[in-house]
Image (cartoon, rainbow, N blue to C red):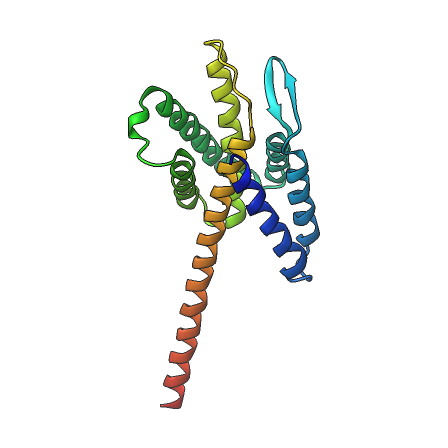
Length: 202
């Protein structure tokens, strides 16, 4: 069922952030509020300049721009380049699905999730920055893709529930990868500490 992945993943995130995340983390309440806003706005849509927008995606895009605006110029420029790369990749992927669907060897959503997660991991090092370029880049890609289709009199809802499914899948993949990275660092530091202890004892 379309949308089930989005709702399940976001509700799991909300439960974790609300009840299990360390209460000392400053952004905990804001993150929980953002998740609730995304869920609430997921079915809200409107038409602007003949394009149909879903409010959740637009909210995420504006929020990503707001966070980007707080970056220093050098980091902002690099983030813009990364976001642009994601945008081009997003549009290209969707156009390939239309013009040459034979290369979609398994479910489109999973292909997009894996491909764009790998792209974000390659372009950025922190989970926050990876999510930011995915949000901004994919939403810009949605708008550009809808604009392209409009030239052929095809209507395409921007940031519909199908998009939110893909976004939530990318998010869970990036979070999982970040957990693996942190686990690797933990074990590396732990074993390094043990080795130092052995050297001292000898």
